[in-house]
Image (cartoon, rainbow, N blue to C red; front, side):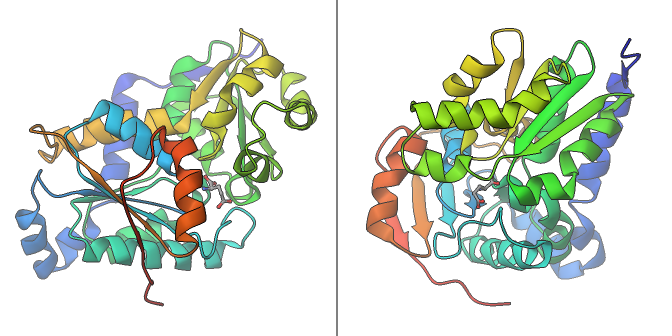
Length: 307
Ligand code: DGL
């Protein structure tokens, strides 16, 4: 018997509010930042960053759910992947990415990258006054809502799994829930190669998912920007009885709730997106179409300032 329990709605609210509170220390500690906060308005763009173009899966969901939002996207294609790098390096890169978005006058910063969300949020909250959202907490909330037997699997990069950030967020929301993780480093290159419907990828997925299936999980968190493109291939291996939590989808729903709560949700007109990358503009523009569902129109190559 699993004997697990989900914590009450009130606990969940408190947990999320706690997280939100930790998003605002600069507003409280720096008088200048308070001024900045008052200047913030719903018509400003949302800043979204990722190690590369995978975070466009989050953009796609945000555009579907909040078509009026303008988005400034940054993909750090010069330094991708983050998922194989150490925590300090990922945190430094994340701060440099957010610093670029900060110069674009964004009203909120979204860390679309699971590997960066897993460790960099405290550092980002310390440096930037904008509300900052990651993908981990929204994914954890969706997973705890979905599970019936209290056994949740999480897949992601080595950096995400090493951090145990999903485990912590899930265990905050439910008691005695078992979280079983599996790092899947081969999946990002396979998706970028376009091998989403390929025998090799199916074999790799079977190998990675077997240990989780043998733990009798009933919910699997797709904890990486690239995995929404593998949803059908993953479902082939897991079968219909395992709920797949798409962290891009749950992140967009979470952002909508939070922007609304903060009075920052854009409601009028149709928003656009500027795609900024740090390297390989042409190749990346071609690849971006697969993640975004359409060819990006406004693209630019930018240089980041080292911190
Ligand atoms: N964006 C990363 C993530 O979601 C995957 C690619 C990388 O390793 O940088 O974890």
